Image (cartoon, rainbow, N blue to C red; front, top):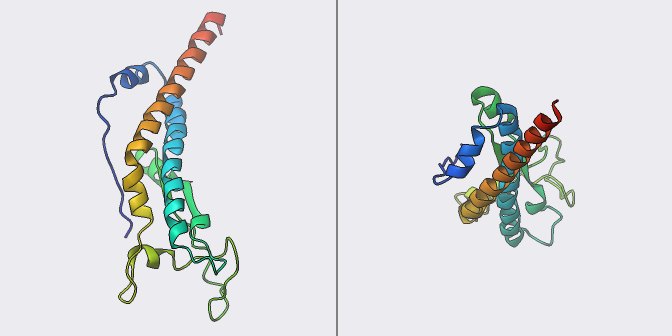
Length: 165
């Protein structure tokens, strides 16, 4: 049901050259850090979009429940780094009859109905437009943060080698 987005980045010769000089462990740590920073840009945009949709008269806030989580399953299966961005809908299993409003941070089981629409309500997307609008900035941030992480790792390695340890 969920779409995934994949893209390739070209023109990163300096970054790719640096990647050859560091270990896999350093690549993964720096990559995860950089990817988290890039994904945060998309999360922030999604929260802005959701705030325009949220009903201020209720305590339920889709924007407060938008979250980013490490995709450990993807990493274990393929070795690729990934974060998932979505809405924490909360447990709907224990909701009282009538689906009462539990206040800020409460369950938002309607989040995907708002995003995708129903036969009676038009779609008001907030996640997909956030990704589309932020992709360039997120890519730039990823490259910037990853290159900084690799530079720090190279400096640490040089310093360690100079000490003889």
